[in-house]
Amino acid sequence: MGESKKRKRHRNKHGGKEEQPTLPSPSAKRTKLKEPSSFLEKMRARLSGGHFRMINEKLYTCTGKEALDYFKEEPSLFDVYHAGYKTQMSNWPEQPVNVIIKWLKKQSPSFAVADFGCGEALIAKSVKNEVFSLDLVSNDPNVIACNMANTPLDSSSVEVAVFCLSLMGTNYQSYLKESYRVLKPGGWLLIAEVKSRFDPNTGGADPEKFSNAISKLGFNSVKQDFSNKMFILFYFTKKEKQISKQKEIEWPMLKPCLYKRR
Image 1 (cartoon, rainbow, N blue to C red):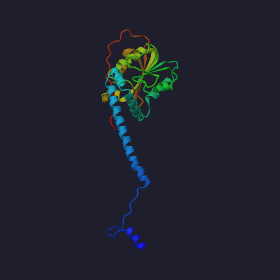
Image 2: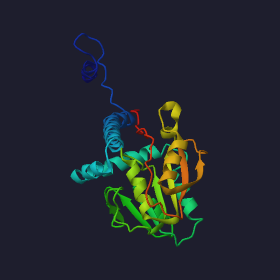
Image 3: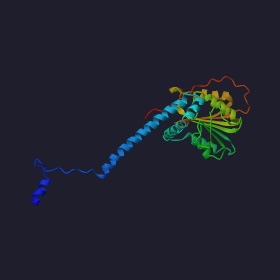
Image 4: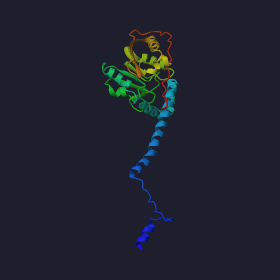
Protein backbone atom coordinates (compact mmCIF):
# COMPACT_ATOMS: atom_id res chain seq x y z
CA MET A 1 0.00 0.00 0.00
CA GLY A 2 2.72 2.39 0.97
CA GLU A 3 4.61 1.37 -2.17
CA SER A 4 1.63 2.09 -4.51
CA LYS A 5 1.22 5.52 -2.94
CA LYS A 6 4.83 6.22 -3.64
CA ARG A 7 4.34 5.18 -7.26
CA LYS A 8 1.30 7.49 -7.60
CA ARG A 9 3.36 10.40 -6.53
CA HIS A 10 5.58 9.84 -9.57
CA ARG A 11 2.70 9.53 -12.08
CA ASN A 12 0.49 12.29 -13.53
CA LYS A 13 -3.22 12.05 -14.10
CA HIS A 14 -2.65 10.47 -17.54
CA GLY A 15 -0.68 7.69 -15.99
CA GLY A 16 2.70 8.98 -17.21
CA LYS A 17 5.63 9.90 -15.07
CA GLU A 18 5.72 13.42 -13.71
CA GLU A 19 8.64 15.54 -14.87
CA GLN A 20 10.62 16.83 -11.95
CA PRO A 21 11.08 20.66 -11.99
CA THR A 22 14.62 21.64 -12.99
CA LEU A 23 16.24 24.13 -10.67
CA PRO A 24 18.54 26.68 -12.29
CA SER A 25 22.21 26.29 -11.39
CA PRO A 26 23.84 29.01 -9.26
CA SER A 27 25.96 30.06 -12.26
CA ALA A 28 22.83 30.53 -14.41
CA LYS A 29 21.35 32.75 -11.70
CA ARG A 30 24.50 34.83 -11.65
CA THR A 31 24.39 35.24 -15.45
CA LYS A 32 20.79 36.42 -15.36
CA LEU A 33 21.56 38.88 -12.61
CA LYS A 34 24.51 40.27 -14.53
CA GLU A 35 22.59 40.93 -17.75
CA PRO A 36 20.47 43.86 -16.49
CA SER A 37 23.50 45.43 -14.81
CA SER A 38 25.59 45.08 -17.98
CA PHE A 39 22.76 46.58 -20.03
CA LEU A 40 22.48 49.56 -17.69
CA GLU A 41 26.22 50.12 -17.81
CA LYS A 42 26.11 50.12 -21.61
CA MET A 43 23.20 52.56 -21.60
CA ARG A 44 25.00 54.86 -19.16
CA ALA A 45 28.13 54.74 -21.32
CA ARG A 46 26.10 55.64 -24.41
CA LEU A 47 24.36 58.51 -22.64
CA SER A 48 27.67 59.77 -21.28
CA GLY A 49 29.25 59.49 -24.73
CA GLY A 50 26.31 61.34 -26.27
CA HIS A 51 26.64 64.19 -23.74
CA PHE A 52 30.38 64.41 -24.38
CA ARG A 53 29.90 64.66 -28.15
CA MET A 54 27.24 67.35 -27.70
CA ILE A 55 29.43 69.46 -25.39
CA ASN A 56 32.49 68.90 -27.55
CA GLU A 57 30.68 70.16 -30.65
CA LYS A 58 29.42 73.17 -28.71
CA LEU A 59 32.96 74.13 -27.61
CA TYR A 60 34.31 73.92 -31.14
CA THR A 61 31.52 75.99 -32.65
CA CYS A 62 31.14 78.88 -30.19
CA THR A 63 33.35 81.71 -28.92
CA GLY A 64 35.38 81.54 -25.73
CA LYS A 65 32.98 83.87 -23.94
CA GLU A 66 29.99 81.78 -24.98
CA ALA A 67 31.76 78.65 -23.72
CA LEU A 68 32.51 80.36 -20.39
CA ASP A 69 28.85 81.39 -20.00
CA TYR A 70 27.73 77.89 -21.00
CA PHE A 71 29.65 76.27 -18.15
CA LYS A 72 28.72 79.02 -15.69
CA GLU A 73 25.07 78.09 -16.21
CA GLU A 74 25.73 74.36 -15.77
CA PRO A 75 29.16 73.68 -14.17
CA SER A 76 28.48 69.93 -13.91
CA LEU A 77 28.72 69.68 -17.72
CA PHE A 78 32.42 70.44 -17.41
CA ASP A 79 32.92 67.18 -15.50
CA VAL A 80 30.83 65.29 -18.07
CA TYR A 81 33.01 66.72 -20.84
CA HIS A 82 36.30 65.81 -19.17
CA ALA A 83 35.12 62.27 -18.35
CA GLY A 84 34.36 61.78 -22.06
CA TYR A 85 37.62 63.44 -23.02
CA LYS A 86 39.60 61.02 -20.84
CA THR A 87 37.81 58.08 -22.47
CA GLN A 88 38.76 59.36 -25.92
CA MET A 89 42.36 59.98 -24.88
CA SER A 90 42.69 56.46 -23.44
CA ASN A 91 42.62 55.18 -27.03
CA TRP A 92 45.65 57.26 -28.05
CA PRO A 93 49.02 55.47 -27.99
CA GLU A 94 50.72 58.63 -26.71
CA GLN A 95 49.36 61.67 -24.88
CA PRO A 96 50.51 65.08 -26.17
CA VAL A 97 50.51 66.48 -22.63
CA ASN A 98 53.20 63.94 -21.68
CA VAL A 99 55.38 65.06 -24.61
CA ILE A 100 55.02 68.67 -23.41
CA ILE A 101 55.81 67.70 -19.81
CA LYS A 102 58.92 65.86 -21.00
CA TRP A 103 60.00 68.99 -22.93
CA LEU A 104 59.38 71.26 -19.92
CA LYS A 105 61.49 69.07 -17.66
CA LYS A 106 64.45 69.79 -19.94
CA GLN A 107 63.96 73.56 -19.55
CA SER A 108 64.84 75.76 -16.61
CA PRO A 109 62.64 75.12 -13.54
CA SER A 110 62.54 78.89 -13.11
CA PHE A 111 60.38 79.27 -16.25
CA ALA A 112 56.83 80.35 -15.44
CA VAL A 113 54.23 78.51 -17.54
CA ALA A 114 50.73 79.48 -18.66
CA ASP A 115 48.69 76.37 -19.41
CA PHE A 116 45.72 77.50 -21.53
CA GLY A 117 42.84 75.00 -21.24
CA CYS A 118 44.60 72.97 -18.56
CA GLY A 119 41.85 70.40 -17.89
CA GLU A 120 42.99 68.44 -14.84
CA ALA A 121 46.13 70.61 -14.54
CA LEU A 122 48.42 67.66 -15.23
CA ILE A 123 51.30 69.93 -16.27
CA ALA A 124 51.23 71.79 -12.93
CA LYS A 125 51.20 68.45 -11.09
CA SER A 126 54.14 67.08 -13.06
CA VAL A 127 56.80 69.82 -13.16
CA LYS A 128 58.68 71.98 -10.65
CA ASN A 129 57.94 75.19 -12.56
CA GLU A 130 55.37 77.73 -11.46
CA VAL A 131 52.34 76.94 -13.64
CA PHE A 132 49.30 79.14 -14.11
CA SER A 133 46.59 76.61 -14.92
CA LEU A 134 43.78 78.27 -16.88
CA ASP A 135 40.42 76.83 -17.86
CA LEU A 136 36.73 77.68 -18.22
CA VAL A 137 35.77 76.06 -14.91
CA SER A 138 37.77 75.55 -11.74
CA ASN A 139 37.14 72.53 -9.51
CA ASP A 140 40.64 72.99 -8.11
CA PRO A 141 41.86 75.99 -6.08
CA ASN A 142 45.01 76.00 -8.23
CA VAL A 143 43.07 76.40 -11.48
CA ILE A 144 42.05 79.89 -12.64
CA ALA A 145 38.61 79.99 -14.25
CA CYS A 146 38.54 82.53 -17.08
CA ASN A 147 38.02 83.22 -20.75
CA MET A 148 41.20 82.10 -22.57
CA ALA A 149 41.10 85.35 -24.55
CA ASN A 150 41.13 87.47 -21.40
CA THR A 151 43.21 85.98 -18.60
CA PRO A 152 44.19 87.76 -15.36
CA LEU A 153 47.91 87.24 -16.03
CA ASP A 154 50.20 90.27 -16.34
CA SER A 155 51.75 91.19 -19.67
CA SER A 156 55.19 89.66 -20.32
CA SER A 157 54.93 87.54 -17.17
CA VAL A 158 55.66 83.95 -18.33
CA GLU A 159 58.38 82.13 -20.27
CA VAL A 160 56.16 79.38 -21.70
CA ALA A 161 52.57 79.30 -23.00
CA VAL A 162 50.93 75.95 -23.74
CA PHE A 163 47.83 75.01 -25.73
CA CYS A 164 47.40 71.25 -25.47
CA LEU A 165 44.37 70.25 -27.59
CA SER A 166 42.72 73.46 -26.39
CA LEU A 167 42.48 75.70 -29.47
CA MET A 168 38.72 75.24 -29.45
CA GLY A 169 36.26 77.91 -30.43
CA THR A 170 35.57 80.12 -33.40
CA ASN A 171 37.82 82.87 -32.04
CA TYR A 172 40.91 80.76 -31.37
CA GLN A 173 43.01 83.62 -32.78
CA SER A 174 42.19 85.74 -29.72
CA TYR A 175 43.61 83.01 -27.45
CA LEU A 176 46.89 83.13 -29.36
CA LYS A 177 46.94 86.93 -29.14
CA GLU A 178 46.50 86.59 -25.39
CA SER A 179 49.42 84.17 -25.22
CA TYR A 180 51.53 86.75 -27.08
CA ARG A 181 50.56 89.37 -24.50
CA VAL A 182 51.49 87.28 -21.45
CA LEU A 183 54.73 85.84 -22.88
CA LYS A 184 58.07 87.49 -22.26
CA PRO A 185 60.19 88.30 -25.35
CA GLY A 186 62.01 85.10 -26.31
CA GLY A 187 59.35 83.01 -24.51
CA TRP A 188 58.07 79.71 -25.89
CA LEU A 189 54.65 78.97 -27.38
CA LEU A 190 53.80 75.26 -27.66
CA ILE A 191 50.69 74.09 -29.49
CA ALA A 192 49.55 70.46 -29.66
CA GLU A 193 46.56 69.78 -31.88
CA VAL A 194 44.74 66.84 -33.43
CA LYS A 195 46.52 65.98 -36.67
CA SER A 196 43.34 65.78 -38.75
CA ARG A 197 42.72 69.49 -38.13
CA PHE A 198 45.82 70.17 -40.21
CA ASP A 199 45.18 67.85 -43.11
CA PRO A 200 44.16 69.97 -46.16
CA ASN A 201 43.10 66.77 -47.97
CA THR A 202 40.24 66.26 -45.50
CA GLY A 203 39.20 69.90 -45.02
CA GLY A 204 41.82 70.74 -42.43
CA ALA A 205 44.01 73.82 -42.33
CA ASP A 206 47.33 74.04 -44.12
CA PRO A 207 49.93 73.80 -41.31
CA GLU A 208 52.22 76.24 -43.16
CA LYS A 209 49.49 78.89 -43.40
CA PHE A 210 48.71 78.38 -39.71
CA SER A 211 52.38 78.72 -38.81
CA ASN A 212 52.76 81.82 -40.99
CA ALA A 213 49.76 83.49 -39.34
CA ILE A 214 51.29 82.96 -35.90
CA SER A 215 54.63 84.27 -37.16
CA LYS A 216 52.89 87.48 -38.29
CA LEU A 217 51.49 87.80 -34.78
CA GLY A 218 55.07 88.22 -33.53
CA PHE A 219 56.56 84.74 -33.25
CA ASN A 220 59.40 82.78 -34.82
CA SER A 221 58.54 79.27 -35.98
CA VAL A 222 61.08 76.88 -34.48
CA LYS A 223 59.75 73.42 -35.29
CA GLN A 224 56.75 71.40 -36.45
CA ASP A 225 56.64 67.82 -35.19
CA PHE A 226 54.51 65.48 -37.32
CA SER A 227 56.05 62.29 -35.91
CA ASN A 228 53.00 61.27 -33.88
CA LYS A 229 50.09 59.49 -35.55
CA MET A 230 47.38 61.37 -33.63
CA PHE A 231 48.65 64.91 -33.06
CA ILE A 232 50.97 67.60 -34.36
CA LEU A 233 53.20 69.83 -32.22
CA PHE A 234 54.16 73.39 -33.10
CA TYR A 235 57.04 75.17 -31.35
CA PHE A 236 57.36 78.98 -31.54
CA THR A 237 59.30 81.67 -29.71
CA LYS A 238 58.14 85.23 -29.19
CA LYS A 239 60.27 87.71 -31.13
CA GLU A 240 62.59 89.78 -29.00
CA LYS A 241 61.60 92.96 -30.79
CA GLN A 242 58.01 93.88 -29.99
CA ILE A 243 55.67 94.63 -32.87
CA SER A 244 54.18 98.08 -32.26
CA LYS A 245 51.35 97.57 -34.73
CA GLN A 246 50.39 94.12 -35.91
CA LYS A 247 49.54 93.63 -39.57
CA GLU A 248 46.20 92.28 -40.70
CA ILE A 249 46.50 88.51 -40.37
CA GLU A 250 44.63 86.01 -42.50
CA TRP A 251 43.91 83.18 -40.08
CA PRO A 252 43.10 79.73 -41.49
CA MET A 253 39.90 78.14 -40.29
CA LEU A 254 40.48 75.16 -38.00
CA LYS A 255 37.84 72.54 -38.53
CA PRO A 256 36.10 71.20 -35.41
CA CYS A 257 37.35 67.89 -34.06
CA LEU A 258 34.07 66.00 -33.79
CA TYR A 259 33.86 62.44 -32.51
CA LYS A 260 31.62 59.90 -34.19
CA ARG A 261 29.27 57.67 -32.26
CA ARG A 262 30.69 54.19 -31.80
